[in-house]
Image (cartoon, rainbow, N blue to C red; front, side):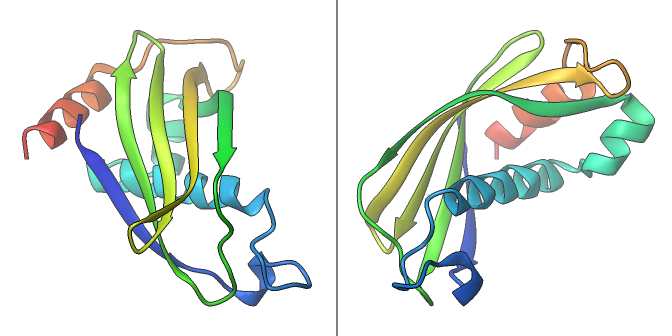
Length: 136
């Protein structure tokens, strides 16, 4: 499936006292990339919640840290949809500096009802948008 790339500059606030990106900030970077991916598909998260009554939550995630990022690095956060099921989707996400892979993650998201937080199917309109993006 197609890959979505999102540039990100490392700010001082993202780093520890040594100027190295603090490990949990990579999760924030990946979350932002998935949000931008949804936006590129034409879906704003507040609209998904209010109009479609859904939100996407992280079901599970595995990360492999390969090399650190540093203050002022220009990174590329990548998100590639591996599969989409009835009520979940799975991504491979990575953080790279130039062509160097820094972090790689497998992320599974679940679609849940915005009020009850119970699992629900991914709306057809979203699945169609994903298919359309693949064809570009």
